[in-house]
Image 1 (cartoon, rainbow, N blue to C red):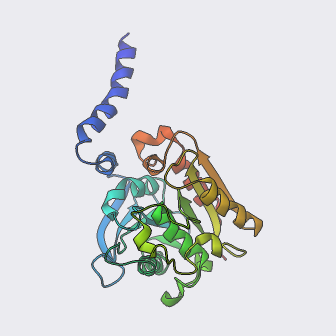
Image 2 (cartoon, helix red, strand yellow):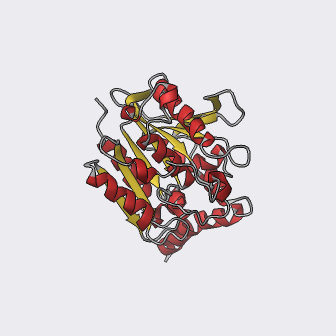
Image 3 (cartoon, one colour):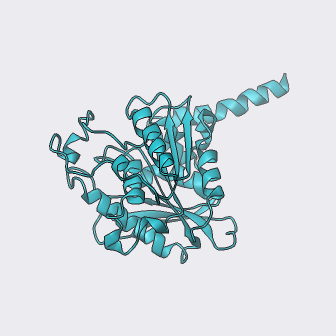
Length: 294
């Protein structure tokens, strides 16, 4: 009986902590519970001259492997009109705890900018990761771009369409791979009224869909989504992109998760929610199994 009480207490304490923090916000709760011992944190690193062209850096405290840590540049979602890099500490900590040098970048949002300016910002942030990885202890031949939701769109466009990195002097061929979680890759005509003005609905510019740019030579790919995602159709977007890349002989890891939705897919990176889906384990396994680029 004593052991049972201890077990119940062990289960209840994290739940009580979540309830106590619930008045803040879901991400604030997850961030508050993230470990601080797994990484060295550096805030407000500029990758460009503008106010939102900054990123936060999470350097693992674990010993770096030969050649340096694998490096991830992460972009958050929010329909291209909301979001802050500080909200995603729990994602960065989860990766840093597994030996991944992680950069979480802001980018300009609507109504300040529309398509494609946030992609230009994202390209600058990724270029910073490619250029500075070695100086920060990372392996410049094992750099990945990653995103969730609208951030996965940004990551996909940088990985699949060379025009965005070109002005920075870099190319997608420099990436070891890319990771997209619940991304919109084939979404026209837009039904998300919050995002419609970002893409000039109904007068969409040409070439806005990642699916259009998927072809041979794309970097190794990890695509994950919730089976029951009600915001971004996983079959049309995630499975559709996976099928097109695989048809072009691009190595693709596709994972569809049952107990999560569009939001909790990212939330499952956090310790208290990892029981929902092995998203972090699957992403880290993909990173670890992906060879350094030639």
